[in-house]
Image 1 (cartoon, helix red, strand yellow):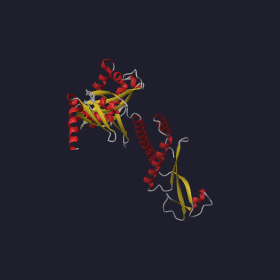
Image 2 (cartoon, one colour; image 1 turned 60 degrees about the vertical axis):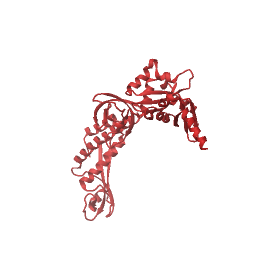
Image 3 (cartoon, rainbow, N blue to C red; image 1 turned 90 degrees about the vertical axis):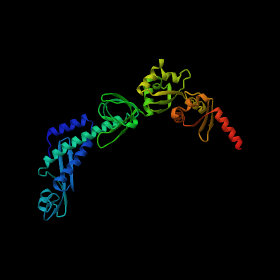
Image 4 (cartoon, helix red, strand yellow; image 1 turned 135 degrees about the vertical axis):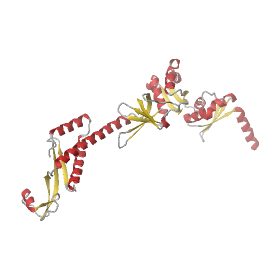
Length: 356
């Protein structure tokens, strides 16, 4: 069965340009032709399709049973007909023969075109999925297309992405045409184009911004140990350097604070506490409560709990508004932190002794 030379030329061109696996599209075409055969003739039982790209041919074979009286021309053949093909054939034998069903050539052309279009769409979806899946955890840029029910739709170079409400920085405004940088949070497969989910509230976004702004991080001189955020309000970043001569906090701040200010501007004014990480948990916990300056820390290792004593005038500073500062410190250090003043500790200790 011939589909025309143009069809095969276009098919080869598409396979090369779109980088579609040849066997994939041939198998899809084979299945579709069998489906079309079944639709046209009621059954595809015993039918087989061969596609020969070299000779630009499609051949359909059907297995027929040799019978005395033919009732189903698609599945049966008379003994006389079988003798023409094989003089030794007998009634009850099964023979596979090439067929050229009437009008099937026209149907096959239509089916072939549909398969090519579908294969193209699937191949393009696969390319897009693999391209953006490889970029998960990176920062990408796009422009706002529209805002619907709190979700921001962002146009990337070759696909549309979404910035869900929960992944946005609170109080940040979006308008059509605005350029947006965001963290590629996740790529999901769908029946259509892949779903690209972005985030500007994820801790990874701040981490990537620091990597872009601070060459020492990219070069491995300064290491980011952990990042925690209350998006748009405050963040804490634990940094460290194996090089004694390098100040990791100074490197992140930059000359006249330019580096850190660029990041603060990108995050809509979010305050960033840079914490010098220490393998000593006492020292790290004390630093994590910055800008407060604790007096001492007592650890309860079995409970992974820390009792932090601060001067009375720094209690509110250590706890922060609505407990934000201590809450971020807990997430940064992975220790439960109980902040108290020295006087309150003494009162509690006296109460304990009295009870004893």
